[in-house]
Length: 113
Image (tube, rainbow, N blue to C red; front, side):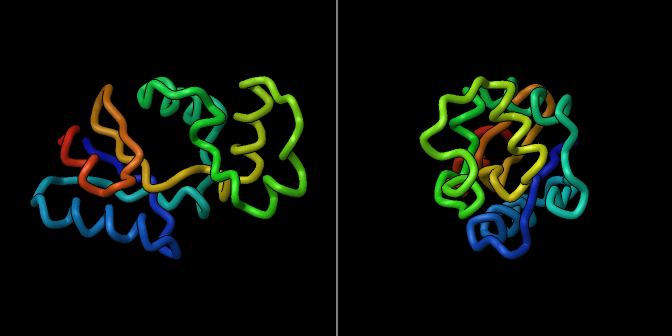
């Protein structure tokens, strides 16, 4: 099953959702700000993305700038920051089985469906 981790207030996330809707594929929408990810779920997504945790952080968010910017953080601390403040997670993330991609640009989503 395809899943999209979606923030309806984000233009890029809405574009990714629209692209998925246009494929005719079945998928589920996970509004991760309403239903935050657990540490284990986030770690699994990061592994599927093949990224370092810092690469999934939205570094222009106010909470990152005020609480974390300029600090030397371990991967675990970065993951904890995203679990505590899900707004820090880059979006949209689309997962299909063992594959995942950040849908920026949205066309990257097509690589895994």
